[in-house]
View 1 (cartoon, helix red, strand yellow):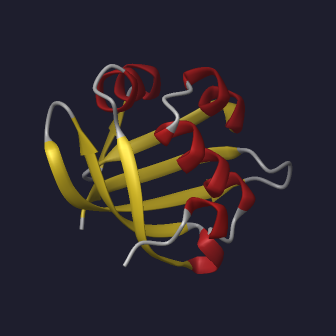
View 2 (cartoon, one colour; view 1 turned 30 degrees about the vertical axis):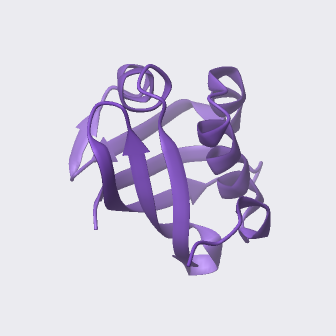
Length: 108
């Protein structure tokens, strides 16, 4: 059973999922610190290239199955036009100003 996006505990993570599912690149970028980083399956990636390829040009969508770590760790069904659907994990580092400085994702 999935968790409705509006019910996610952490406001920054909730906004991130909302931006992904709304295909809203500008909103997502506004949630990130200027020096934000990310990793996919344990390897650091170029954030701008990755979000364009894996989220925005391929219609990425997150359906969250559960959350932990105060809402900053998710297990979710992620799908896009490139890879189809898979169960993924997401971990977010949120700074005191409420912006995300790092996220890590990969297959769960």
